[in-house]
Amino acid sequence: MDQRASPRIVTYGCVALVSMILSWTSWSMAGTLDVESHWLPWLTILSRFGLIDGYAAIVDDYPPGTATLLFLASRVLPAAGEMAVFKSLVACAQLGSTLLFVMHTGRAGISLFYLLAVALSASFLGYLDILFAIPLIVSLFAALENRPIVSAAMFGIACFIKWQPLIVLPFMAVIWCGQAKALRRGPLIAAASLLTTGAFGIAYLFWPQIWNAFYSAFHQIQWSAEALNFPWLVQILLGYGVQNINAPAYALTALRILFYAIYLLIFTVGALRCRGNPEQMMTFALVGYVAYFMFAPSVHENHLFLAMLLAIVLWSRSQHMRTVAIFLAVYTNLNLACFYGVTGEQPFSTGPKFALLTGAIAATGVLSFVYLLRLLFMLPAEPLGRPLVDASDVLPGNVHV
Image 1 (cartoon, rainbow, N blue to C red):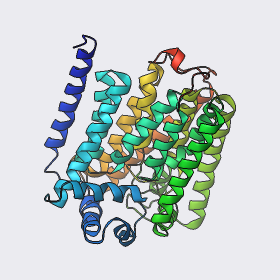
Image 2 (cartoon, helix red, strand yellow; image 1 turned 30 degrees about the vertical axis):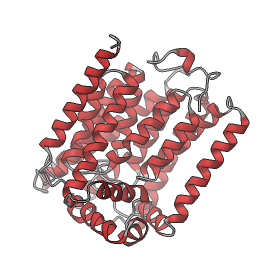
Image 3 (cartoon, rainbow, N blue to C red; image 1 turned 180 degrees about the vertical axis):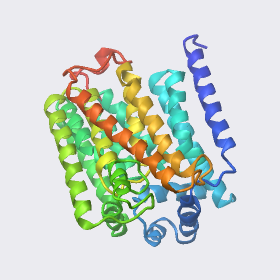
């Protein structure tokens, strides 16, 4: 055996062992109410009606990729109970995405950090964000390695599992377009045609429910769906308390305009400054996504997951992103823990003290975003740090599909 391969095998083994221990430890935990009220009934519906008709019968705001993975898991484990199928799917997604970090970074430390950052959301509380982690991680690292076709294809898969990756799509499109200029026209046209045909094919199979789900996901009307952000802070300051309530139309409009303005500013500056630098463009994408979480209305408590994942990927490329990644991991898990603890049950009574606690966290998040935005616009137009791959693999003239 190659002596250089031995440490990598040990790293894979240690990380896999920790992931399996976390999954085993949380196996008997029910997670949030969504597990019982949504994911387990979905498994029942999909088993009864099949994938296409089952997705139509679900009538929810998720894209069909989530239902597809649940359906496949039920077919792989036909004799298992619904909870065992669900837990197995989440455990495999957590393990697979963590091993991808080992594969791309070769570092146990940052891979274990990623694992610990996502374990509360995935293994313990049963959120489904972990299901898009594998294709999104592949997409992000492929973009950093100048492989735009692979990156775009895997990004599309992530979007068909949950809608949130669409928020960073404009930033990723700038990266792909810049990298595609170095590709031969024939393979590029063929790949673009194949990806477009695949996307329209999936939409056709699941039409019209896929459109209804998309429309529903982006037309919710709460102040904040338990996301500790600016709308949550406004809700508390206006005396509405900590319940999940609908906002008046004028407030929703004002919050959306605020978010759109901040997002457009971030995207415009990023597109003008970072066309040839995927690492910096992803940094702008990260801040653009955090702007969505912090200022858009109706954001849910688990939606910061994508930003946390993206920040850890960028940290693997540059130590300059370490503080941001750690802060987002802490903030993401703190937001979840405030409402659902570790087991899925509310750990605090929802009185004035809880309003003060969550309001203080939300204010900290908003102020931190302002500071992050200031740092972003001060970035030099050069890579954030030394890549962990050979420079010849990532120069614009060495683009791979």
